[in-house]
Image (cartoon, rainbow, N blue to C red; front, side, top):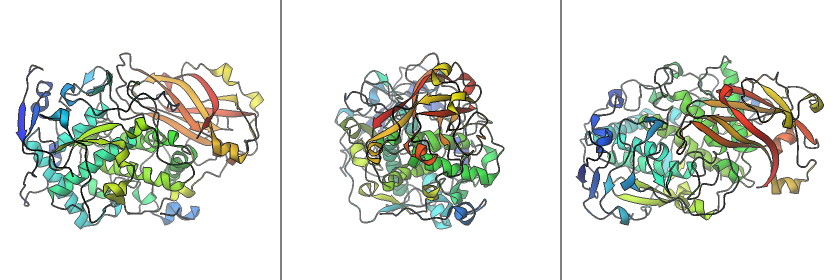
Length: 587
């Protein structure tokens, strides 16, 4: 089929498409191989607009550490963050020039991920929030009752039924294609591929995405109060696939999931393609430790949490924030079907992730972390850079009307009309206090950083000593500047999973399967992805870890030189690192 062919589709944009209330739940066959209607030849369809668009304090949980794991659910309970010179905000993508998306470099998605294009694309209005009388409250998925599950199943069934018209922007596949287009190279802005991951666009893009997806589901069952559930993987009771998504034959089920991770299997929030031979209690403990490090220790400042600046004209994927790194990406990998699907489909690859209904539940909890992070306090607040605030995206609303949206309008979820049902956050009180060893490592017996780097490959655990820019800093100095352990130019094959862990004040004999140790600093992870116009598959990134709190906890704040150990977990044989340094940066 010629790629120059064009399809013109006219749909009413001001009224909801009516569906029979007797429509029954669809099964997982709807997630089979995409229809030939989605081949590249029909990528340039035109979507005609037939009418004008209408504008429309939680306290930290005091939880006894001894009761966190067993008492709260037990085993089976129900980057490069350096500021860039200000340029301009990222504009909404040009739908008319939307092109082929890529599974990975050299492998194209076999169907078009591009949305239907409205005739008046140049005059698409900005979205205005409709009036509301009641907040939509997103519940924890593991605690949802059968009445809620039935509603959610019906709404998803009706969305799948809309796929009969492959160009209906409200259809399930078209909604999944949103993620594919924004994340797999279909769009270009400023002459460069647009990528909403690995930068400060990660949180706002996905918040807007879920906002419209949620409203569409509610409209399909005539319930404006319907809210998406969140996968509460940060709490022991939620550390498994929620039961509503694990019922075969349900519209919420996807057969392209790792079958070894069903039926109540405890999730590993640090998973990167390899199963760990670790007791379930230790996995849950590791999960809470990872959450504490990513939400508290490693994210004291906005730049660490949100990710690197990404103004117009800069290269895509400048650097991910803490939560995007872990647990966001490992949850994708753990859920995806890498054992049977070549590219980890569905959840294990960006282009296909939206084809699994659990994707939206997963990202609801990712979004919840944005709210929870700001509640921790300190300097944890939204970015104020105008290039971030004025960046824009494009979506269709529940009435099939096209809109532009700005980052600045999604900073307060309550103003958007939704909030999250409260659940305890036991990770807040899970600061690692158990040490691997007493005393301090003799740094004189470890090779200095200048002798270890550049490192050609991280195929085994390595240790090195490194000098700090300042020691014995005052409380005021620590509040003004964060101490950042910085790994410059980490290079690896972007087609592979990558993870390595970082420890301070230990040597390479450390037990890296037990992360609930005070010396554990954090991890670097990467999901296979398209990286700009890359043709040699090599990604080069900078990874930064905030270590001020960590140095205090392990008694190293007065030391001029400290020991660092890197432990590869996945893909290390192809990871090289040019240099490592410690910097002091404004928070």
